[in-house]
Image 1 (cartoon, helix red, strand yellow):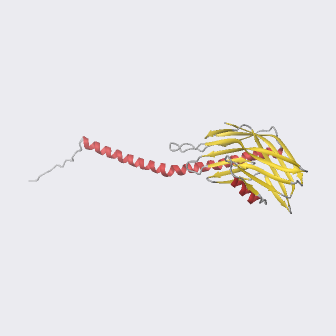
Image 2 (tube, helix red, strand yellow; image 1 turned 45 degrees about the vertical axis):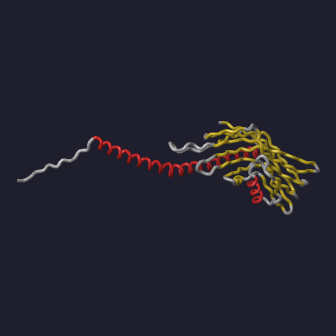
Image 3 (cartoon, helix red, strand yellow; image 1 turned 180 degrees about the vertical axis):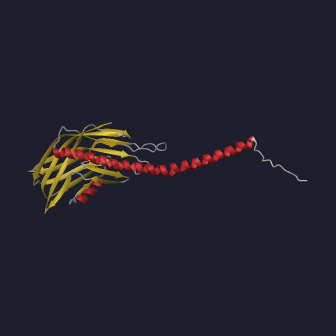
Length: 280
């Protein structure tokens, strides 16, 4: 006699079905968390670093426009002709993962430049002041500060500062004598600062210029205070023939640089007053 057996599949009870669903949910969460961890630990820092680096390049371009505006006003004697430029304070963030990186723009009047020479036994002296700086505390890219002072653009990064755009100072050797060309930018206005991530408008207006040529002065001294003495000393040593440069000890964060030049045949100088205003 043939035995016919019917095989029945064992059905899971409700508790076993719940365990299976829970395990499946946990596995899905683990996969999601692994993917999220990969994004936050690997992809987001690289994205943020690229964004901050792009912003620093953008700031350099914007400071160059600012310097170009001021130089153009002085060169063409465009008084009462305001020029407008912008500087973006911070960089964009990474949506859902990282905030924007803020920056702080400051207009300070604590640094000065003195230009002294003796003409026919009479001492002549001019003084200029003012600096505009943007400090950005980048999170992934190197924190940087851009500064416009004495007609130059300075970049500070870590403990090192370099001059990225040269100041309007030229010291040319002609035989045994020197020809000195100098433009002093005296920034006037109110000390102020603005922080955030948006763009700040900067209005520059030339108020007055004084131009003169002095032949055969008895002596010449150029002095100025700065927070970046190494950058200035390096620039003068590399770009001019002058070697008698003295750097004073810092006082309140400012160092004094003194440049004495003998055997000067002529001085061609321009003294300009530039009004600077910031607005959001």
